Amino acid sequence: MANQVKYVLQESEMPRQWYNIVPDLPSPPPPPLHPGTREPVGPDDLAPLFPAELIMQEVSPERHIPIPEPVLDVYRLWRPTPLLRARRLEKDLGTPARIYYKYEGVSPAGSHKPNTAVPQAYYNAAAGVSRLTTETGAGQWGTALSFACALFGIDLTVWMVRSSYDQKPYRRTLMETYGATVHPSPSQVTNAGRAVLAEHPDSTGSLGIAISEAVEMAAADPAARYSLGSVLNHVLMHQTIIGEEALRQLEQAGDAPDVIVGCTGGGSNFGGLACPFLREKLAGRMNPVIRAVEPAACPSFTRGTYAYDFGDTAGLTPLLKMHTLGHEFIPDPIHAGGLRYHGMSPLLSHIYELGLIEAVAKPQSECFAAGLRFARTEGIVPAPEPTHAVAACIEEALRCKESGEEKVILTALCGHGLLDLAAYSDYLSGQMRDLDLSDDAIAAALRGLPAAV
Image 1 (cartoon, rainbow, N blue to C red):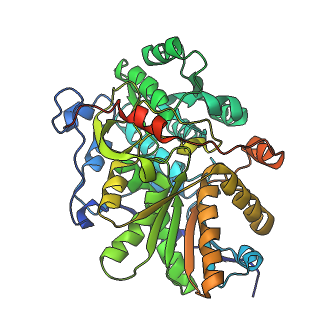
Image 2: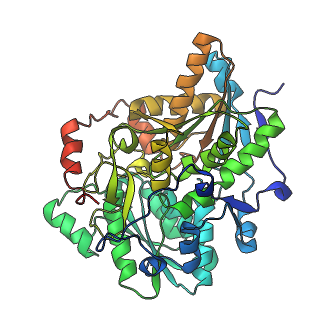
């Protein structure tokens, strides 16, 4: 048998619908609240930021939403994505476990992010929107939306978290290649950015600050709307094409997962992989353990509080019931910039509270060691974000080695690391450090939570 086995669906087998897990949950997640009235937000409250179709998807009671043909036509550039059996990694670990990874790095932007960037650009273009604003952490989301906006003729302005803006210049160049305008965040362009810089001139930024800047600019321009790459329900729903394809591919392989692992920052990659499998679990058709893996430097699931909080630092967004470290929390500038968000998807936070998934946190040195091991066996250099999932897969596989269990482990390798080699260089040269996040730092950030709702 070949060392590596690939399972590829035909284009005709690509899912034609996104999956919405909310109707299948034991109870619905708490609604977002208006920051002023503290009442549940309605469509009119969100209209300055999002087109009507995305607002309807955000609150939809339907299990399945048809994927528009123009979106499918773009998806065909790289979807269906392959499911691969990591036989070389298995052999290197000496494990009886079978490790599968759904490889999303084959997209034009090099990650899973175009799965939602393309439909968001399409729906905005259909609504007559000529300009979008957004934020990006490591640059994966900004790159994906730049690509999508180029296809649908929309101007894009991106606020890139300052630490990643400095660490990852080629991601900035890639966004500009697709036609986007990119600012470091915090910036002097917005009131939110200027306020942060006035108090912290050397701020390395955060996704919360970058969101504040992008939302401020969108709200001030009637021709503009805002686009978010994670956290919200419609974003996770667009990403479920990952899990739906993986279900069909594992059937090809004659396997079913015992453990599903995904890196988790805002939740789009993890939710996209896990939600279709959670549907099967809730229906009694399988029973996998579903495990979210987050950075120890930004552990919203494992050390955060489940409470209503702002999605951004300046308090411009609706209040979301989520696991949060506090909207004033500024994560240390770890290399996994896409996971440096103070909060977690409200939908996934609710699912976690229901006890349907579990979560662990990993330090970045363990994750980069896992990324190297993966690269040296499977040949793919993972982005810093999915190295967290790779580390958890290796940990699980080694437990199987000790116990002799032949578990099936599934993850989504959500992006390649070919533009993240400076991070690998830091690790290889011994310059990378694990940053200790104190209880006092978390407590200080949580004191800024909005008054109890």
